[in-house]
Image 1 (cartoon, helix red, strand yellow):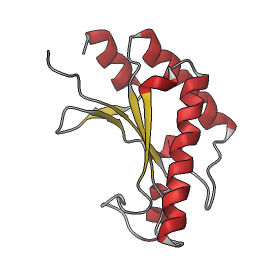
Image 2 (tube, helix red, strand yellow):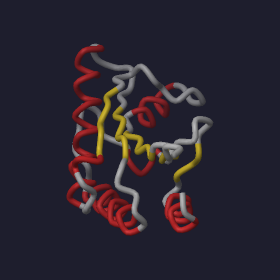
Image 3 (tube, rainbow, N blue to C red):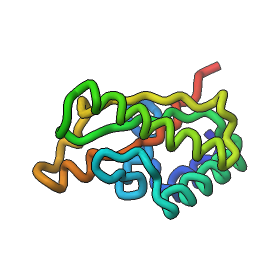
Image 4 (cartoon, rainbow, N blue to C red):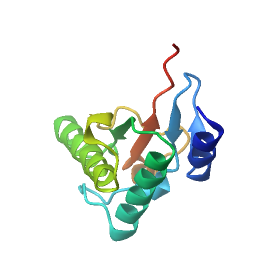
Length: 138
């Protein structure tokens, strides 16, 4: 990664992971209402601006992962998490990233945030994460 790419990732709140990927782990930016896959106006604007910033520094490959809380049937939660991921992916495309560089994945409620419990956990787990894959070694 270039210094400019790292600067953009850090400015948006991405954090490096053990496997070398960069993840946007600030769920408050991409939380969803109960049983919803809709982005509000502020979230949609943020995702579009993020896409523009990533594109400007040459980052065109991202993975979008949707999550749900622990209420509802597992099969329904899986579908809802996939719809959430796709909604964010669509907004990234709207912001200028190529659709061919975006993959989506739904996790349902199988990957809850470990540090919180109760109502707060439910809200924080209705999230989408944006992952920048680790650069491939030549």
